[in-house]
Image 1 (spheres, rainbow, N blue to C red):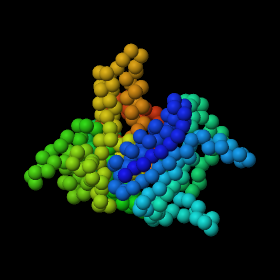
Image 2: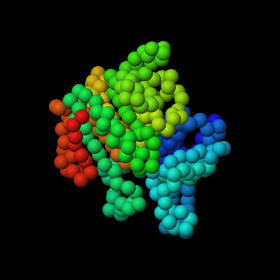
Image 3: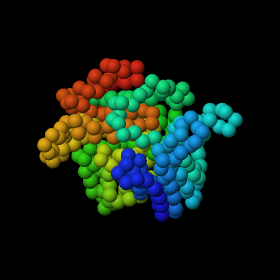
Image 4: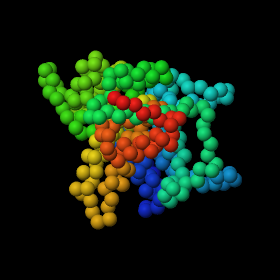
Length: 301
């Protein structure tokens, strides 16, 4: 059971933020491990008199009837001041402070921001496949690196376009996607979220690789995220958006914005696989790789 309560003025920026938070809470609790009872309380427009920051837009309190466990990917301070990253953390309740901004992202000021030196740096791997998947050796490398960082294969996330999510009937009567069959042939376990029957459950095997369609990856994360045939997903979205475009719409920009969802799913390592030697996605990635060569590596499938 999920309970959410909030009080705010209708049509205010804070009201719109509350609606967005509610939607995200419901979406993520439906797709995560079942919890018997969760209560979220959202307090709007908190006044902190006598403090340097007097106005807080939103405070979110969450309470679980049974603590949930998770593997943190960020280090944090212990009560004695040490910086640690424990293997497992039990979460009983939480509090979030949210600042609501009405202006566009390009007006956000970063002058007072500083890097968190305790967060390990990430990297981007771009694999050019020429209509082929990354090979088994490359996947083995990414799985081993995930393990070396203290994670398991289930902490990886693989996103695929619709053509790789096509279901193939198995001899046992079940069905799984084309990409899941490939991993089965390589001797690996998978949680195939492209299957309707599978995605109504949640992964229970730490050795199973998670596979989802791009359209279903919103809100999900992985220590290592592999975006398979990202250029094909862009083409699919471009075709879809062009067919439904109205006056003033720019399907190319809208399709590019869709790519930002899978591109922001990785905690540490982002692997981007492209299949076409001539595509806008490849051109954009080439420009990024040239500018940020210290964290971006380019390889062949």
